Length: 142
Image (cartoon, rainbow, N blue to C red; front, side, top):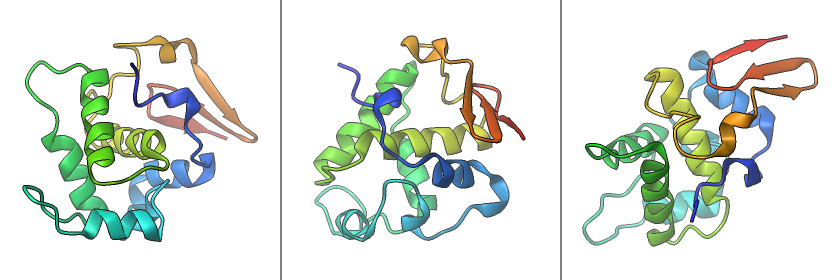
């Protein structure tokens, strides 16, 4: 089962694009696509065996901490999806995973391999009006 189904995420593309850009990265966890006040509250709650997550830095840290030796991108994203599920996040899990994975890919190219596991690589370009994103290239053009 693909838990992080990229093509079925409902995150708005404009906030996702802003989140990808290095110069607009914010500490506020609600700046991440898919995370509103209710999700932020759940992530900030004390949870046995897990630290509260209150910033985007901590959320990316959690994502990175779930990347085990030899894990595929699918396994890594599924681990994050299941972690969000365990924290009681019931909405936008796939969108949150996608946003965090894509943002991490911008910072650390190669950690989120779009062509590794499933058929997402069939999309070579995403056209968002006057902005075109080349999937897997980390580049935008207008």
